[in-house]
Length: 369
Ligand code: G6P
Image (cartoon, rainbow, N blue to C red):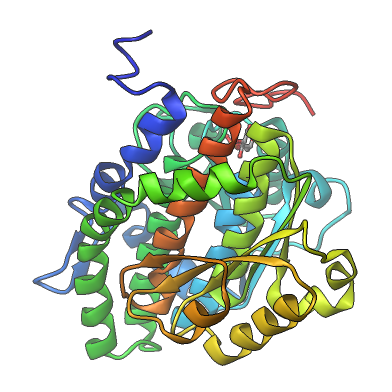
């Protein structure tokens, strides 16, 4: 097992560090940035189904559901297709309205999650076209779907999902970009810019991993917290949910993710000097509005750990800690903002001496409902 961990203390840390390669492997051969081409056989072979879809329904569980939420923002923004994101377990039991004009995208790392598999069978029985985004090749979901795209993240052993999440977002970005280009909802220029920027993401993730020591120091400060709040807006709202889930899963600290503006409808009542609040405040993502959310937290003595874009000056003045991410297009920032939150959960769990790779009560694949 030590050999499999490749010199890392845990699989989770190894998998966090594998992300530059995993993301590259995900778009390799599919995205030709210089030529301005995205080709994905599962999408190309069914292009008319995607382009004529009345809506896209994304079904998933856990971390994959969070990737699906990022997908909602991507598809709506780039391809102007209405999207609904559903927990597979709810979807399958509520007599959902599905027609043959719907495209269903099922996301699953393992390809074996029972609820997701059952939701796929239901959607197929109603005549929908079902596309799978799986990591495990030949898995049940990969076989049950009409077509699909593998994430090519490589085996993920740590129960808390890391590289599966970022590679799922990469696949969804490629599909959204492709559809946006085909539909003409993205101009050629913007499409090309995205491709160039996507190609720079693995290098930027690599750069971000170098701040691991700094994140570890922040983790040391907050390791004894009993409640944490994660806030983000737009593309980074799902990242806030995922950040909170990562902390819960491996450190057993209670954490909630929230859209930053919803804070005033509840979570703000929880804020006091003992409450660490992780806020994603990238420069193009409703920045001024997030800054005012941060000021509201500060006024209530909450501790602010902000994830900002390199060169930020405003948030730096008010936050207790800042973590900088390299500049990119806002739609691609989830691939970067996620990284420090993964590292943070990891280090807190290690400080608390928890079983990082096999947290209590959790399973890597939930094959029963
Ligand atoms: C379990 C795992 C999570 C995962 C979820 C969905 O809860 O512990 O990490 O996100 O199942 O799994 P899937 O394989 O369908 O993505």
